[in-house]
Length: 345
Image 1 (cartoon, rainbow, N blue to C red):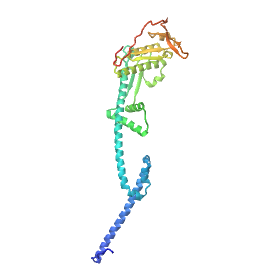
Image 2: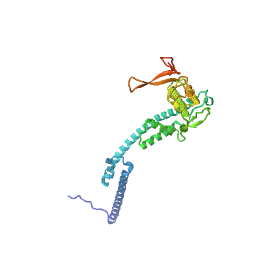
Image 3: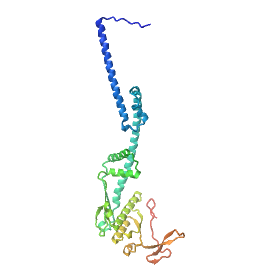
Image 4: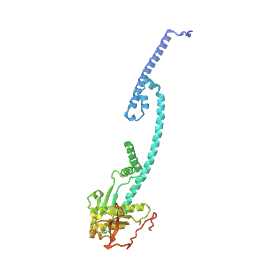
């Protein structure tokens, strides 16, 4: 049964007025719907363009296809649900980034501590390269001179290391521990970097600091003297770092035939003086019969290769001491074995 309709009670003028009002509202609704449709199309295209950008290429296809493959109607119907999904994902990613940030700050602090240790060791190497006061013109001079500028503050150091870590992440590289520390150390003293100089060995002991890059142009004796002095400095630094004190011995340095290319008497004396000042025992092996050079050493032993019980083996044995035939033990040289607390036995 048809629904009853109430008759319009107004006059013609009132009917025309209400009709115009309804038609106006309908026209506005139609325009609003059309405008909303255009906005929907624009928003859909914007979402699809955004989802297609290369910066989002790492996002799984199953997620991107929802925005690039669905038609406008489906995309509009599911927009609210997908927006909620993206908000949840955004919150999750923000939490992961916060965790990564905390981890990176921890890594930066640990690397900064290592960098500070390295810089402190370099400064300490300067101090422990001081030569004895018995070397004439070189007396009390620093053989090794390392110059650099530390970061202005701990925050500055952390910022520099943080930048290195960011670059490594952008490079997607995985440097080894030592390589990473080297990069951070160089960044810590940038832009001026390091200036390293050594005293150039010479017979008259003139103080002549030269850049370490010129070491390759030194003579054989000069190179050997520099290497012995550097070893002595590092041995002393290592002993001090291990808590053995300033009076700790620097161990023994065995050199394979250094007199073959470096037999200058004045430089040999300099090597021995520097080694003695740092508590390093030098042992030179050589087959060179340079009596002037060999005579600089207080203890000279003649060795020979003796055949072993097996045909494939030979042994280095003592043949002669100071030019005399050697039979049995004729003397003892005392050396010190340092324990961890610095005591000698």
